[in-house]
Amino acid sequence: MAVGRRVAGVLPLAGATAAAMALAGIAVFSVSQAGCAEPGHYVEHNGTVELVGSCLDPGELPSAPVEHKTDQKPAEPASLSG
Image (cartoon, rainbow, N blue to C red):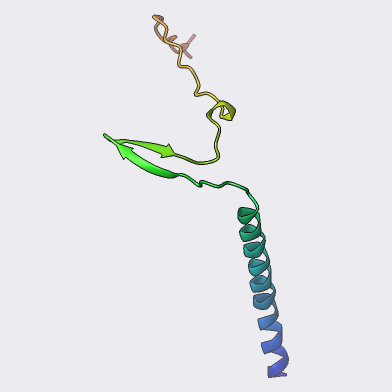
């Protein structure tokens, strides 16, 4: 009976390990097939970090949101006492 319990306890661990190894293999294969000749690297210039090189095309990236400034004051909260 003790051997059966040990096997039952090891099976979930073996299954999780096999799944992790399969996912790691898929990740390595995906990265190797990405087709990027120059992976790029980060360089710091005066406190600003910049990505140099890479397969990213800046034209394909979404633009940063534009912050609209107004001269209006925020609305005052409504009074609950009526």
